[in-house]
Image (cartoon, rainbow, N blue to C red):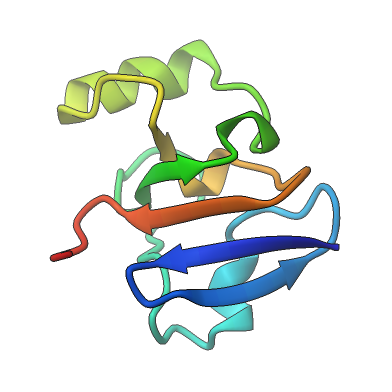
Length: 99
């Protein structure tokens, strides 16, 4: 199990190795979570900023990188949560978070 910390709330969730971050929607019952839309990397609703542990979320593919840049989220700290699989402890926050 790996700890996913959702900021700025500081909520911690344990997910098994290889789990998708989409599981946060079920673990947190939609509260204090990442907003998910299509869940296939096409809508951009689930853009997150990775604050720590980016290397534990799998590699970013070209399509994900291009789409994030199109949305204005260039750089290695931004990901589409629906495209990430957890393989270690991570700290993230929704890119549209007010804090």
